[in-house]
Image 1: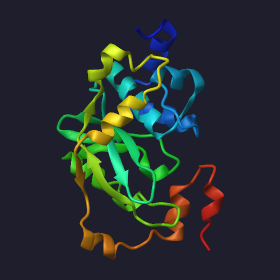
Image 2: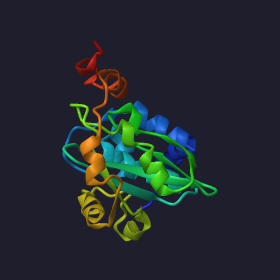
Image 3: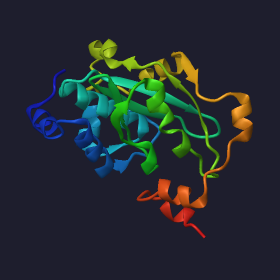
Length: 204
């Protein structure tokens, strides 16, 4: 199933990763436990983290990039999924998150690990515990083109299941984890800036 004329017109207006991020920042966060297609995101103007990454990958593919996503695994916290892209040899990312600091990354990172580590200090749970533990190898979503992942009405949880099965690279060892410091209340407040939970983390 192909994009409609209206969808094509819309996708042409978000012609680079920064504009795609701007669209994701402008829409509501979907609190429902489901995984809908990029078409649904365009129609409903709503997405959670996973749906946002799938939408970003689809929009970037429309604009000439590979549709790549990466799973970030966390301890005592929600996992995070990002859409990644390359400009020349440098990596960047687009993402949907309630945490403002877990979204866009400029394409300035020389390796995928370097990109992922840019999230580390900003990836914390609501208690301030820094929670990022590993990241997956990239998943190229073209393997699901036969299932029309960009436009289907089918739930896309099967893509999430595949992400779980991929090899994940650790970013910290046990000694590092024991020595991690909590994020400050100012950092918590900054991370939640603009989200519905912002008022929970006002610095003293």
